[in-house]
Length: 273
Figure (tube, rainbow, N blue to C red):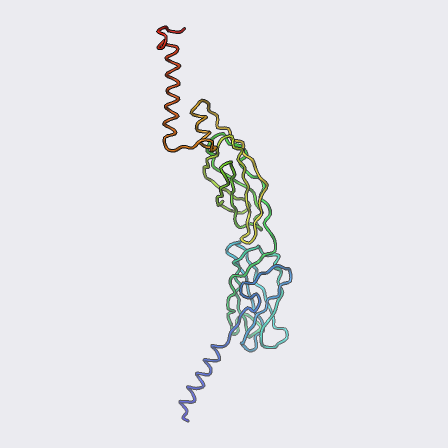
C-alpha cells in the first residue's frame, strides 16, 4: 500500500468526520409548543469539547425576540449543553426561529460551530385580550364615515377582524393592526332602520377573543316614496330586479302629475284655489 493511497484514505475519513459533525436544537423540537416559565433548551452536538453556546429566538409575526442566551457545558462531557428560559416573557406566535452557535473554547472566537436553526416553533402562553373603545357608535349617512377602530393589547395581538351584522347577515373585514390599535378605513353601506352591530375579533395567530357588541345608530334621513322604496330594498322587504328604480320613479312621477292635475282642474275643468 503506497503512501499516496494512505493519504487519500485519511483525507476521505477526515471529510466524513467533518460532514457527520452536527450541532442541533434537541429542544425545542420540530413544531414544538412553548408555554411555561421553565422551558429547557437542549443543544446536542457531535463536535468534541464544546464548552459553551449562544442562541437567540426571533418572531417576525410579533416583532419580538429573545435576547442572546448563553448555555454552558458545565459537566465538561461531550454531547451538548442545556439552559432554561422563561417563555412567558415572549409574545405568542407560531413563527419563532431559534438560531445560534457553539464554541470549543471559553470565548466566542475559538472553533465556531453553527447550530442548525429550528423554525416553526410556537409560543402559546396567553389568549388575546378583548378589544375595547370600539368606534363608530353613530352614522348620519348610509355610507359610514369610513373609519372603524378598536384598541387592543399590543403584546397579545397580531391581527384583528371586523364583523358587521345587519338583518341581511354578517360580513367580515380584515383590519389593519398597528401597535395598540386596529382600524378598517373603508366605506360600508349600512341599511337604515336595521340596528346594525359590530364586534372586533383580536387574534395572536393561535387564539381569538371577541369584543363586546357595539350598536350603531344609523339615521339616513329623507322622506317620500323614493326614500321609502330605497330603504325597503336595503332591508330586504322588496327586491330590485333592475327595473325597480324605473318603476319607483314612474309611480312618483304619476303621483305628482295627478296632484298637479287635480289642483289645476284638468279633471273637472275647474281650477282649484
